[in-house]
Length: 221
View 1: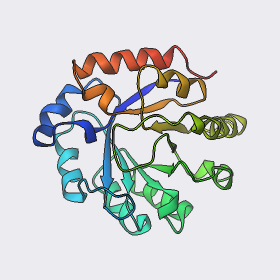
View 2 (view 1 turned 180 degrees about the horizontal axis):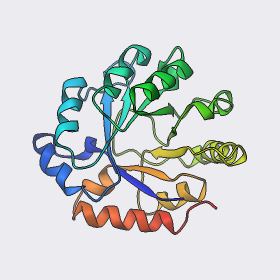
View 3 (view 1 turned 60 degrees about the vertical axis):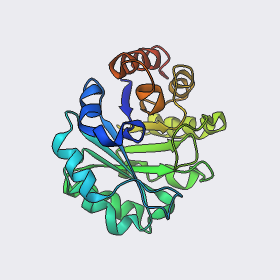
């Protein structure tokens, strides 16, 4: 399995997004955190900003919706041309129907699970999704510590996907560093959201390379 690194622009310079997008051009995708101050206690940006990022980004967009009423709003984000749109299971009335709608528009459909959300009810639905995002922090703010107790959930998704031979990406988001990326990779993750560990100090391109190498060396087999 490949090790994909998706830097989160939540940790970028909001006044210099285009510059910072250029600094992560060697990444696989750019992770765009959309928060509405309802589903999570933070407000970032909405559809117009995502549309503009789509226009100037050198790499595809991995949109993560931390918003209420995902059934209503997620298709609009897919219409921007985003490569991937991930919505939260807790915010969708019909996750399967929404995933099918996103795929029909042309985006990969992702399902995100908060730390307190059990994964078992969704394992049989995995064929409907292109990506599952296991949150390794509480969604809403960057810079939190990695929750090691999420690893059994991660392993459960990987085991189910491998058993059914599904081509599904398994993403983790929250507290990803050179150390924790090893743990997540060993437990089945292949797609990693990294914010502070990419943008805080040093060259983002170097950080991306080191994270990718560290993950690849510990990938679940």
